[in-house]
Length: 188
Image (cartoon, rainbow, N blue to C red; front, side):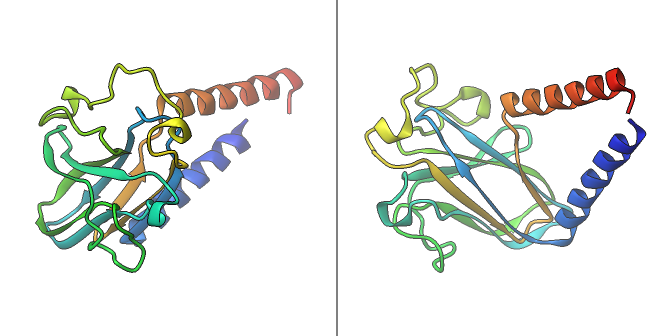
């Protein structure tokens, strides 16, 4: 059991060390339903200039049309954007979104990515999104009829990470508990 704990701690430290050294991050994944909201946290240790946050998911219509929203750590809306392909023209195509922030104060922030028309309902995360409460429709059956692949980039930030969905955290925790139980049962 000690080896397992040491191994998991080493992986955690390695992940932190890698994240702390880089200032450009890219995350990919899939949105499964039109109601899904994907969350990313990022932080700045000091006031920064020229911070960029963008999606390059649309791929000229091969994927869904994303909307990006930028929030403070407290959940207050800073900006929301649907169609800004000028943030990283090398990878973005029309209908991608994002922000170029000439100045951004040190602190923690959150980015959300949703499908088109699922705009924020208000000026706080607690206000939710347009499609909240609707029966989830698979993204391929939604009006966009496109896969839900997303790609999100961050440049000029100290750390960035996707926020795990509760189900993924539960699954990871269950797996670790099961491994610990089996190890105890078989004494290895």
